[in-house]
Length: 198
Image (cartoon, rainbow, N blue to C red):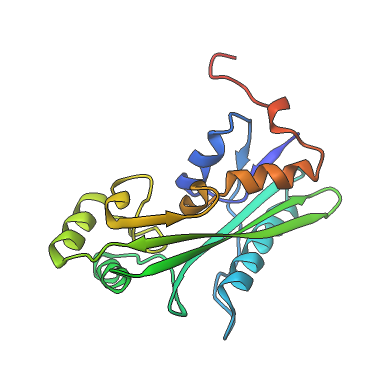
């Protein structure tokens, strides 16, 4: 099995590495601009499929594509990019529940077969003060993360409640769902697991 992650995201690479299976990475070339009036579910499903298919068109193997957005009160939140936008996002999220939509696609480059699912994960934020938001952003600088936080780091201090079947979904790659999709290709990850001393 040749497994390819259609992403160069450090976060997704770290998550996939938790399964102890060999894989390579490849950067997909995909326009991530949303379509007018596109729902979050459709957006992440479309982009995860596009990323997987883009890489599968150039490399043989089983390709994993993923895309994520955060949505609250009908507003889709992407990656902030800088402090000011991140501050605006966290101030907006204060005291609210945000739903993260993660599209996941597994594509067989040889057959062209693909499977796509969308996983959701809800995060309820505490009521955050200006001081708390500013201090958090100074310490963690989560400017490349949808929603302006890193749940695997200090971002956990911002929350009052988490609700979802797989906390990895929040970081960008739902591993439980991934293993389920891989079984549809007759791939059992236990057959490919390697310990660090192998």
